Image (cartoon, rainbow, N blue to C red; front, side, top):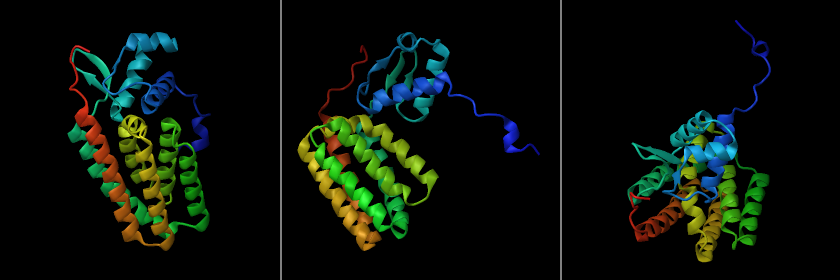
Amino acid sequence: MQKLEDWGAPTYRTLQELVADRIREAILRGWLKPGQRLDQAEIAERFQVSRMPVREALRTLEAEGLVRFLPHKGVEVCDLSVEEIEEIYQIRCVLESMAIRLAIPKMTPEMLENLKALVNEMEEVIDDPLAWTTLNHRFHSELYAISGRPRLLGIIDSLRNTVQPYLVSDISHPQRARRAIQEHRAILEACERGDANAASELIVAHLQHVCDSLVHNRSRRPERQESR
């Protein structure tokens, strides 16, 4: 049987991975908006690559739920419907409730202090939606990582990335950011007490508040125009 060291040195990142990373970042940061069409030729020219790695990169992002291929119309950044947003948050409520229940028995005082520090940082950048949502992503990721369940974390992260572009816009309202911070602090207090039931309920309530806000925003937007 071949040994691992016989497989040779690790290969460098592919063009597909590099292009996927750049487009993913642009979507998650809100530079590319939901419903925006993506011109593969334009992307290939921007990155000075052929169209093949661009198409492969877009297929990767399609699997992550960030873009969709439209028959005979090209590719666009996913523009979620109200029903899709609600479904994502219904699933997240189940999975993130599970993650925090698994995490609480493994939490140390140092881990809790690190999470509190992240919440404090979020308060300092409350007027910067992009910085705030980046810290928010770190807070949830580090909180659930304590569970030690990488497959669970991967699914949660994928679902969170799908709605991330909407969060950047939503959190531009400072009162929503402040409410989220208060909810984060309450979740950490329950974790500090070792109260898994309370922490789980608070996570679900927090996610439901975010979902309600995103659904409200999406409902107020005009329907997409096919001519776009």
